Image 1 (cartoon, rainbow, N blue to C red):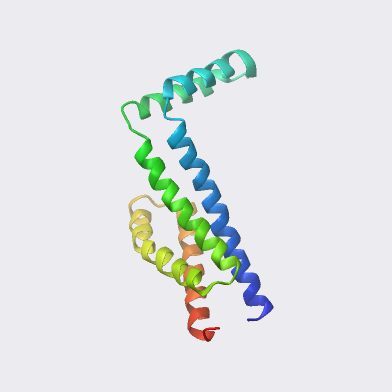
Image 2 (cartoon, one colour):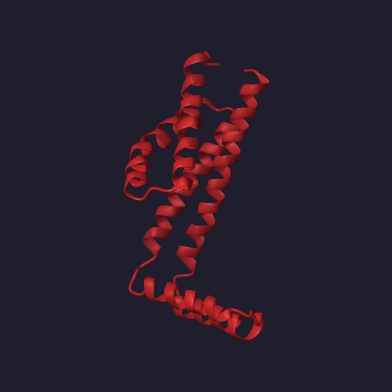
Length: 154
């Protein structure tokens, strides 16, 4: 494997690990901050009495909007789903970092299988950020698929 190929693999691994860590943080929030009245009251108190922001009322309105939007919604199932995805991303990233062929295959299959769903979602709700994310995922899958076909099994 050339140094350039190794660099691209490391870049892919870093991106997957960063996504995994971010999703892990989201999962922990969804799983353990499900007691909305407690954390909302703490945040509201912090904004009202501690932060002394000139436009604090905007933040308070946002907190009320979040509370209204989440009222009656059970967050734990979403937290479990986010945790599962986080673990998959962290497994992919760590395996690719250590140049494990199984991890490269896992990344190609798992990421590649979600691209049609991402394209459908992009068609429904277009945005440049989604387009950029899809382009990055397609590039990762294409590069790893090319590399897996080209490089003989070690």
